[in-house]
Image 1 (cartoon, rainbow, N blue to C red):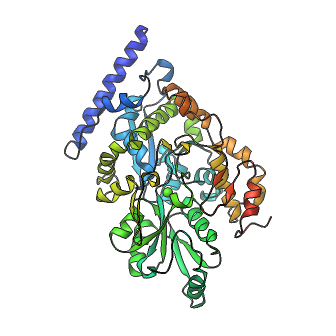
Image 2 (cartoon, protein in one colour):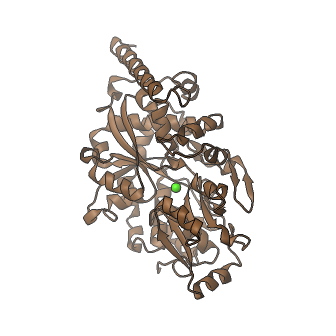
Image 3 (cartoon, rainbow, N blue to C red):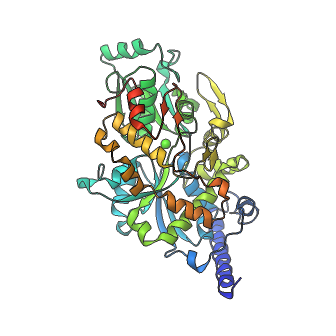
Length: 451
Ligand code: CA
């Protein structure tokens, strides 16, 4: 070790220590102080050295999150001191009121009082990059850097529909939806942001059961808090969202859960870490430092022995402000669905590795599925499919993920060799081959796109 790197390492340890003390002051009465010892050492295969080449250009960044379990790696990287460990000592994880606010805040960036990036549903980073959902359709290039989690979402149904066979499989329920439609009471389903994950899961589930989401039911965007209120009063029939909301709806006896997204598509891609491209281009080392911290946090979150503490941290008033119990059971794969019970760890959310391999690595094949699904429902013109690869190559920065993983000493076996996870299969037997998205579209009975 050279004198210089020894100096850097000592300084890094001092910085991490100072940050730990700060955290104790803030959270001393709420839980255990951050642990920089056994936990982190046990999960990183080789010690992390902050060489001069890896020293971030800035120690400051502002990352937005939404109070659902997808944000856990961001919050844990902050709470457990992983950001500080890699030199990012001034990371602000900033709670966003809703997806629209997150979008507005990334449009202005941290310099304008907004955020530099954070947690996103797919394909929001693409929609923002292409100016599809921004003010004046301004293109704000973004980079997808890592996937935050797989699974962990569900479709909740109001109690008034108990016992009507509204389940994972909707076969045989068409007449129920048709009846509601003809009585002028179309089945109303909400999500918190249009044309992204939550709407896509819902549309997939409905269409697989022979229900045309554009004709047989009515879809609408509603803020999360209002959604629960609307479910309570019965003015809304269903709600597609991330944990802990589906669980809370059952716990509070407002409704039941028809399907977990993990049942619709086992190990499905869920939400992502993405940042403004200009921030990343200006701060490549800081970006990798953020990635290394997120990866370490993801490994921590994935350890089921940590999930009790994870529930406690997320439940705090500063973060989700919910009872920790509503978080813990789903984290262990225990879902009281209302009409049935799931107790299966493979159905829980995963952050680092799931049954299909890497969770954190942002597979380009998954970005392609999200874009293909947007073409399916007419959110994107079908011509987009022809140049999807070019767009994905521009937005998806799996190369940065790989560089950060190597620097962090992640074993080669945990670094995917291909940008494709291969053929994906859904609960209805439909397959998505990333080599041929058009064949997938053709195989779907209900769709808006005309091929
Ligand atoms: Ca989600």
